Length: 338
Image (cartoon, rainbow, N blue to C red):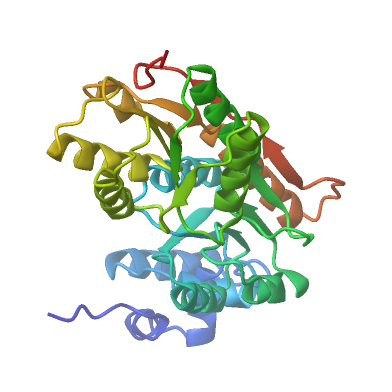
């Protein structure tokens, strides 16, 4: 069934007034054009009776402003990005704006297409966690004046504002914790290899291992997904020399690890220790609560939105690129090895 929307022509026909008069009243310009109170009342009553809804998109284009912000993230299936999206949406709402949310599904072509479509909707700004290391399509709009802020993932050596966690420090501290508990055979299961957070987490892991004198370690995997964690752990457990600990670079990877370990009757931490990057409330309710590197999601959201609106409002700011400190939360998933 097709719903026929009321337009100003319908209101003009019902009231017997001209289309231009109806348009001026409905667009709040009655006083400017000296339209009488009685005509205004007739038009407003007719609009209410006919359930007239103004075409906000057309009005936005005329005004050159939409009060809408685009938010593009790599995956809503990832609890970290889902929480980040929820927080950012709540912050944007405080400014009286609406958030247009898109999931690029870790695909650069999808990201480009979604960005083009959102720009065509006349959005006032963009918050993005880019899914690739190709900055051209984002930089193009930033260079042409679109307010842009990157979150979590960002482009190094570019001036585009970003808010992220100090991923290097978080990974270094997590690895150091494993080493301090006697672990020397540690495997790191990574996510999207070319993403900035992943590269810095892997570097933090490697530096901690090598500083401790361990040059025999594995870095495996290629995606921030449960499936990646599951498959890599299954393969890992079939090797002759298994690790005593696994460092998963996201909690989705960690869930895949746990699924594989349970299927093969390995206990955490009795048989193998596990630590993960990213916190989430559900980690507390697992059979073995996981030690993790917690990112300050709430602070990332607040600062990113503040950075964006400082651009929208053309406020000057010296530093719009910031790394926030992570927190190492120790629970029950790491065993001390003698």
